[in-house]
Amino acid sequence: MSAPLLSVTGAVKRFGGVQALRGVDFDLKAGEIHALLGENGAGKSTLMNLLSGVYTPDEGTIHIDGKPVHLNNPREAQAAGIATIFQELDLVPTLDVAANLFLGRELMRPGGFLDVPAMRREAKKRLEAIELAIDPARLVADLSIGQRQVVAIVKALSYASRVLIMDEPTAALTVAEVERLFDIIRKLAASGVGIVYISHRLEEVPEIAGRVTVMRDGRVAGVTEPHAPQAELVRLLVGRPLDELYPPTRQDSRQAAAQPARRELPSVPRKRRLAGPDQRVARRA
Image 1 (cartoon, one colour):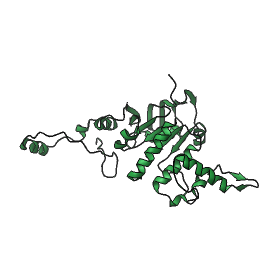
Image 2: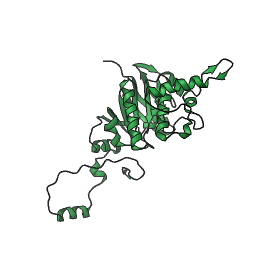
Image 3: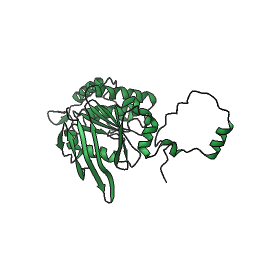
Image 4: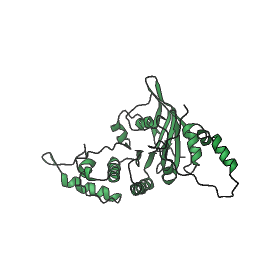
């Protein structure tokens, strides 16, 4: 059995007296889309930052292809083939698409001048590789949020990345942009790229992920299939069954007893978004 593309074993991270990670194990296979779920404060952002080289673990090890690696900064993570697309995209709005793709790695002409035509030609090839029709000369400020997200993916892949970590990539996208992004993510996975997909949106999990890890209080609460019942995912997220979060009231019981029994097909619960602006899973007081 081959080693995972990426694995973390026994990761511990402390910030003063706060222990953000408590012995976390996590792995990612080549060509896999692995969803990472958790409420705010669960530890998923800290784990992402360990894998990105932003933080170093106090305890535990990170392996790539079964070999231990030490990621002391983001450049070392990029050199190891790990790219991260944070929720705040690492793009400069006042520069064009090509300049953003080559930022810090500009192509030069003799005499020390920027080779803008060469960068735009190469940028066009990379955009066309994922079937994105965007003029490399366009300013990033003129692009939609969805287009900027895809440009950020192209930029990440330009580092020859084998692991792509995506933090809440659909948070500001329209439905059409989400579908377009999912198509691109699936194609990347089919090409062998391993993707860590961080999200609060439970309804996205069965659509995009092949496996799900749920974190709670700095630990892995469970690893499950993407088509697991939503009630099971909620139980892993908050540590209690769904019916304990919303117990029936006396009024509900009286109304149910007063109504005549009717034979109906069971209703399908609405898809819910955790930690959204209006709907949040209640925490224990």
